[in-house]
Image (cartoon, rainbow, N blue to C red):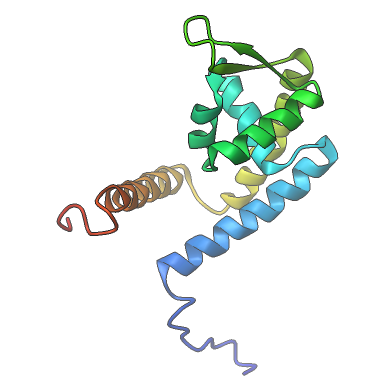
Length: 161
């Protein structure tokens, strides 16, 4: 088929497929950009969350990074060993450990944020401001519906709009 015509692909033409394709490409690009900074994508997610809200617990970090508490504990322990994060017992809930960025963690986060920002800008380069805003809003609505469905035990939670 050298005419440039593309046959319809019922799977590739779905929103879900294109969303997964974009997510996969984004993850690969972020992984590659973070490698020289000596971070993984999940580690970056932790540093970024702590950069936005210091003192988060492991459970809070796990929710923000979309991983299990057990996985988050391993991630935070690795960051702690590298001197990027320090943990302290919560003032009133002694069993809860709160995580904080160290100075080295803050430096690494600044470099990582710039790398991730550059990738996102490249990904969105063909979209104008209005399109970017609309895409973000539409993806947010899709995520909200899927979260509501999960909260409803996998059934459609609300009528279609």
